[in-house]
Length: 91
Image (cartoon, rainbow, N blue to C red):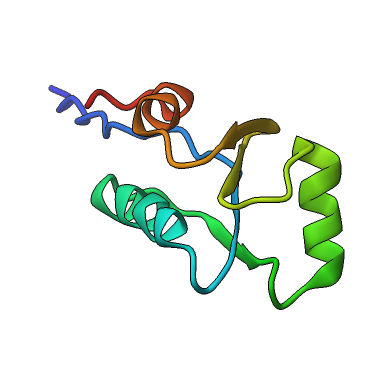
């Protein structure tokens, strides 16, 4: 008799970048949301990196932060519903 192996639930890995600044409270909220839902991301501080700031503006048309890129899609500002939808998370 062969024992059945238990299938592990594997969540989809997303490619996520948060364009943010050091002093932005909404950027902090995005990071808290991701931490709460155990989401891995890359943080890019546009106040330290002019090239990253230009990339953010080119991708989003926005000069303000946060700008979140999830799998190539852009979310502007802290929007938990849009973040959850993009990540397939129920909140």
